[in-house]
Each structure stands twice: as structure tokens, then as C-alpha cells.
Amino acid sequence: MKINRAILVLITAILYLPAIRAEDNSTPQQVFDGMRQSFQADKAKGVHAKYQWQLSGPNGGEWWIDVNDGTFKMGRGKIDNPTVTFITSDNDWVAMSNGKLKGTWAFMTGRLKVHGSQSVARKLDEIFP
Image (cartoon, rainbow, N blue to C red; front, side):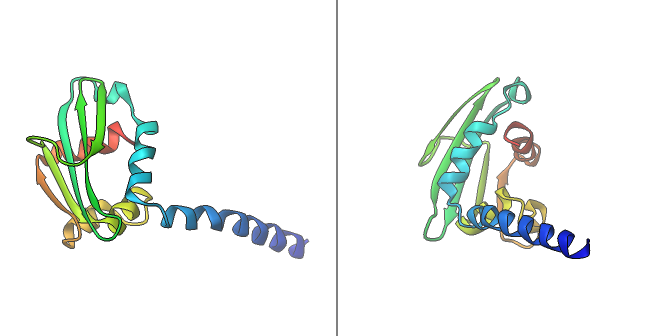
């Protein structure tokens, strides 16, 4: 019985590992594409915020999201007058998005800089869980 349980655990781990590796190898663009699917319109009601990302690294660049009372637009590049700007590396953004790096820890250790309203920045997790 112990051998069967060990084999089951091993098979489960092997099946689960490729998913972890795929997340670790995600690009920022894939993260933003995934955010489109996770949008919670009810959590965005009454919210008027412009979010800007400045990501360094080989897969870095600039992205923005404009949340406007239950709707949103998203794109690459710069947005005028962002409410919040996130500055970090491409790898750290992907790690935060995949739950491998806590945003609070990244902020406290200087790996994430947030310019603008902290409360609006935190609202992003509710709008795009």
C-alpha cells in the first residue's frame, strides 16, 4: 500500500511540474493577456484609475490598463496621467503575478517601486484576481 501511495504522489508531482515551469517561463505579455480573462467588472464599479507598468529586462516594456467604472482598456506603451505606476523587472512582475514573489516583499526590498496611490494600487488585485 505504501508503494502505491508513493507512486501516486510521484505521478501527481510529475504532472504538476510542467504547469509550474510554464508559469515560471511566462512573459509579461502572457500575464497581461491572462489578466483580460480574470477581470471582475463588479469589483471595478466606481473605480476610475489608470495603471502603468515600466518593466526592465529582455521581455520588459511598458503596458497600461485604464479602469473606468466597471470596464477596462489595456495596451502597450504609455498612458497619460497614470494614477499608479509600477516599476520592476520583467521576471519579478511574472513572479508576482504567478504567486512566486509576494508584492509586499518585492516592494519592501526595493524590487518593486509604486508611484501614486497605494490604495488604488492594492485595488488592482481585486479587479484582476
